[in-house]
Image (cartoon, rainbow, N blue to C red; front, side, top):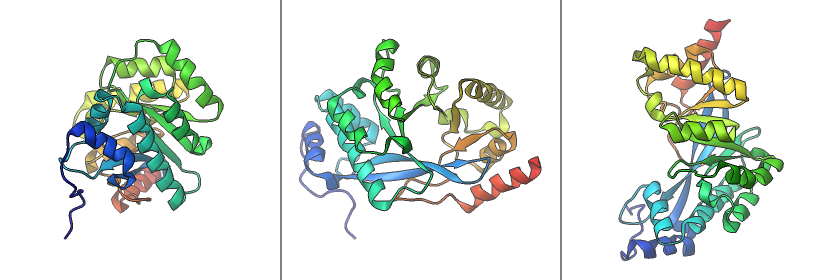
Length: 265
């Protein structure tokens, strides 16, 4: 069986970043659904990038390498274009949104702007990643403003993982607040995590944001989330693994949502 990893001769890592830009087939989009725990329906999909080269490295490592060699915005824009093209070719399900990850430092770059401009703004969510600190929130809000005027919504990723991510939420007032996976795993057995969920859910409601629980993998954590009755979206291997458009939610996750809905009646 032929490996999914490219068999072309290895080259310096920096050169491979250039190869991604020249050979679109080396970057494969994957999509992971977000399930509404209130309705049991999929309401959105996050787009990811899979890099089909050796040596195998995480997407985070490749994007960091692109930044190191001066191709950060180009690779991010290329990845977004590939995701958008794949999504549009498959036909985004009615009413669902598409979520893309963008580094705050590149949000105003011309290539990133052009890539985002290729998508339907009303069905697009831009997730601001937290791999670096933001030192000037006023400047970042100015960069975000034209996107927001077009109808694009923003999400803050990894909320609760550290002070920086929570400051992103306070300063940027995003439409979606994505809870770090470390706060979700083990929630069924830790009262402190459930107390945090109640607090952050109330906060999100106050600012008009939708809460997204990432890293939902265990049945117990999913049950705890559904039993809260909070309007939460859930994302993780317990819902579905990333794949070609469009992965369906697992039957077990849908059953848990429907059972919790019946219990709340």
